[in-house]
Image (cartoon, rainbow, N blue to C red; front, side, top):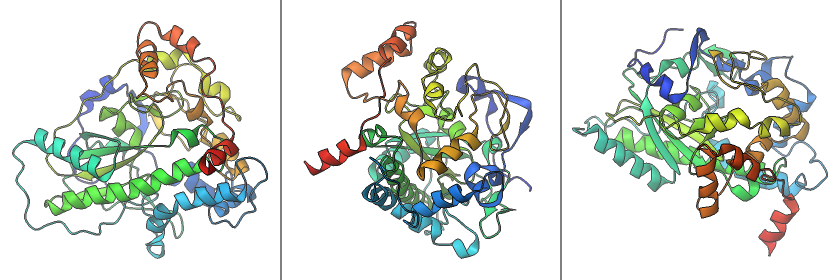
Length: 392
């Protein structure tokens, strides 16, 4: 598939972003992501994976036990509702919007463009509008075609299909959406899955509204969630945080407790710079997430180019999980798992002075002290306690 004719990326920022691409690099085919493989690849698909997807429609019998009762699944599925409505609206065209295809525009590009004489000022305006619509974080980086999926997926037959992105795209706006800390503390549970679903529903509305604003200014804007491209490299290059052993972006505001969305645009915008602050050095000595993973899907040791299966990008030196092991546990639970997020020492409330002090230690030369202070951090809370507080 030919690449869209867009502005070449500014790859000289890779080093500051902690991105190391090798000569073996290959763009990732979304058809190989673990969720898409669960629909076509017999090495992944099973009765358990089918039941996993069915549980989001309440077609699977809920498990017994705290956090897996019918009300837990009911809340989780309700949290996903807005996202589900969006993703299913063009299913007959093979477009699962926000997941295997970009969100289709509901607003035409205005025939006249608003002049932009100061890209830095416009970037500030975009961030203000993003906050107005409800985004918790916003950063901007260059359009880098290495992270664009080699093809999108036609969900009618799971075949590769062209992206059909507009030409002339120059920037990627990355939005961060905070997950509820109290629900995250109950992972693994169906109840905790409501924290994920709520942010997908939130981000669907926010990313569409911000894209509509840009299109009303007379510029292209493609709203995107999990589709079209890998968001983590863009989030890191946009200065929102640093990549960690648990495969997540650690942000100074919310730690790993976020979902990300993105907008591809040709609106003239100043770009943010990566902000390495010391997360990599902390993860070098911390294996809390790998230790806690029930199926040992997370890596120990330093970053490498090793990949366990086709559900990982090739030719990038980084910490890489075994997606097949990870998803097998999700299927067993009939819900998502984010134990690695829950136990991460960076999963904190940084509005509190004591957590800000811990962060300063963790990102500096006293990181081993910070790791010791976090020895009891991230214990699971009983899902029933969340319901008890809600009823109180």
